[in-house]
Image 1 (cartoon, rainbow, N blue to C red):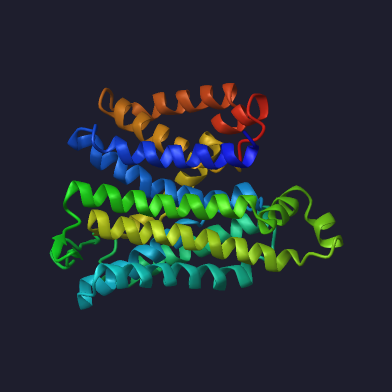
Image 2: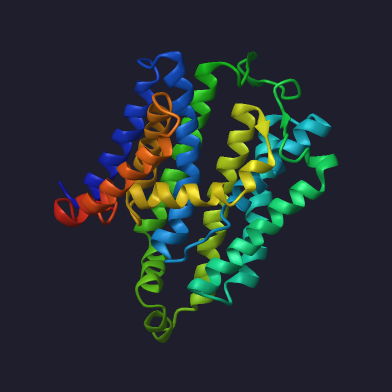
Length: 318
């Protein structure tokens, strides 16, 4: 089997397994996996920026929050439907990513890291400052305002476990497909060239600024899609999702699963989520044990789990 067919079969198999998995999960894990799928979409967006382009950000939560508030505020104040709210959230994230990119991409390396942190914190503080509109850290609930979807005349409420899971899976599948298509495209190869040696890529005639702006736009789109989906599926919008901690999470998930791998963000998100969930149920000092486990994983898998698997055994793995 050719490498292209292996890649396609692997990713379709993962999506098929996730589709079937919902029928075997108990209610608690049903909701957890739906949450993981949305957050994995967010991590995939981060991986486009870090793994493909080599740009590390500490302000990526601003795109997730832009999608979340772009979708949540119209629902809360104007009662718009879920499809329009999702589109507004997506547009908010893409717009913010492009505006941010036009300014921040004039820097690189540690400077870009600092600028992204500053922009992210600026958005976080803005959400807190306009507390009368955003309700700040307290946030707001959408369940009473959000109309159900209609399918064949049957209302499908987001509170229904099956609807929640399958919409989350659809968002994840779209993010995964976008990342895989980008990774295998000519554009993706240019981005990897920029990651490896931007100066040499520029000497070959590629406008690195323009390519990085496209990557940032795609990354922001995926992150905002996850943010909008999270708001609609879990009926909560709050400024906490714009904090620096929520910018660090996708970095950890991506590093754990494998930077630059397409499926790494999913694996890292799921592993980190259940590691915290399991250990926190046993001890209040769970962060100590989670930290020790992460250190051990990094020592055993220095390139992340799938990154190490790719370098040692499966070189065709994207």
